[in-house]
Length: 254
Image 1 (tube, one colour):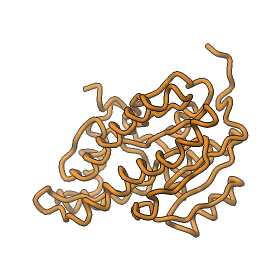
Image 2 (cartoon, one colour; image 1 turned 180 degrees about the vertical axis):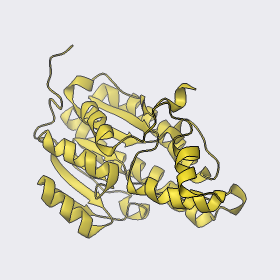
Image 3 (cartoon, one colour; image 1 turned 90 degrees about the vertical axis):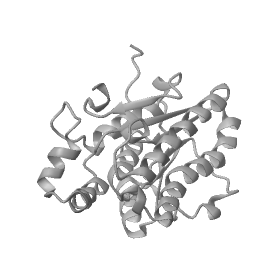
């Protein structure tokens, strides 16, 4: 045991959290701010982002992270980067629109690459940095009808490992958090989508899809994932890097 308090070393650090206006991003932004970080709430939803920033004493960056051309070449000063912004689209492979495939991969793979590229020079200069990629159990496993999401999250795992290897000598760690289903707005919307795609009721979707692989009979809460992110950003996690931190209720144990 190190004896360090939770979130040790985070106070005064600059944190950038994408998709922070709701769900996991909001919970992580709040946890980092609670540990003393100066948090930028980055999201496309201006009204919700401003509300979260006001609540946690942070700043906002209103941006569409699927517009990767606008991100190319930027420079960002942040000590902690949390790549969280994401969406979901559900279609059988043979019906999956190319436009939606590209949207998901721009937002969930290209944008994390470009934001990582933008923060690394400053992190290297300071000899300290934490990059946390919100992947998914779908970065390790696949499910039907989610080919674009699964492909993007698997790609994000590769980016996580490559970043960890390059950043380690400079004091920069990079880790992925791989939750199963978490009770967030994106999951709540999926219940209706899955019901329509599979031709079953929403209650059956929750039982047959969202909890089918879990040994724990409930979904994780955003705040539980945020506690892990807080740990990975702290001094206690200085030699933890390139890893997938699975929070899936036992899904991957079977």
